[in-house]
Length: 394
Figure 1 (cartoon, rainbow, N blue to C red):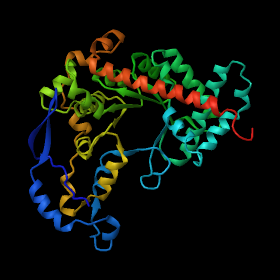
Figure 2 (figure 1 turned 180 degrees about the vertical axis):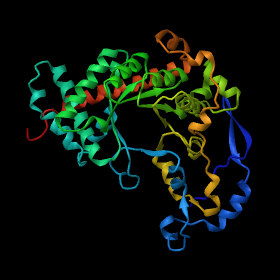
Figure 3 (figure 1 turned 60 degrees about the vertical axis):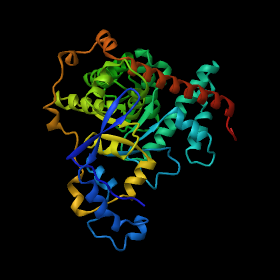
Figure 4 (figure 1 turned 90 degrees about the vertical axis):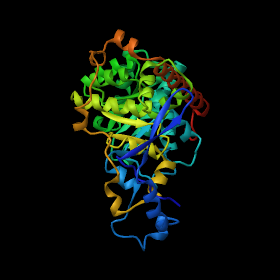
């Protein structure tokens, strides 16, 4: 059962004590009255109650979807029907999952890549494996393009994270493969780590009309530099920043948010959003690593929210009533962004020197950890492709 407890702009404050960072958590003033009103109307499931519900009844998922595009954080096999995604990402992690599920329809995309004659002709084993890797990534990406209405983001090998020219070459190679199977570039994004070299690669690619998606953004310097580069989408990991703040100290940006009683992850998304909209950048902002429903309520208005299935299910099962229609408040908007003040240090034209000086230890550690995970996944995928090549019946 689920009781709808909508967020409110009128709030009391309590403090949740982290090890290093105390963060104010907003609780609705009308909490008690909401509980009293809602408890007699709780249903075991939406489907069982559907015959008795008022025509104006909706769910929390419907409500939050009116402010931000909600993207399911899911593998693609069992959850398309429950939460049809509007966009998708093809990654080494996804391909590893596909390879472990022989009955999935996406498995044929990998087997087709492994049977590719062009790759087979490569004499160098490493070049052959790289060819298989890229073909498999693109084949699965092409299948996803057919299934989602929005854009498909293709992961760029994280081992190139500190090589601007290497990233650009890899994206050109992937895009060529997409063109060969008639996938238009406007349906694609290329997912690049937000190192300085990654941001510079994004600048080059965007100038060529190729859309990029910068990931592992954990600091304002990364977000602002990416916006200045014209990056199409930047992705901030809210929960990971919060997790780091609980057990670490010494990052000025994170500690500044904590001293204000703010959650550092949510604060970064808000600040990046305000910067993008106040100064007219075209970048879209994506919030990821969502830990609970309150995170989503606090992020309403951001362009995209990647939410775990468990949270989406809770939102879907939590009913809202006509008198609660205006309880869901937009937290970010282009008009409110104009009132945000930035320091002179935050309004620089970012270069490598200023960028390196501004990215704090929290962002550096989280970025390094993310890159390590991506590299490990890429290596595991290559090892797996090497073991299963050639595929059956080839």
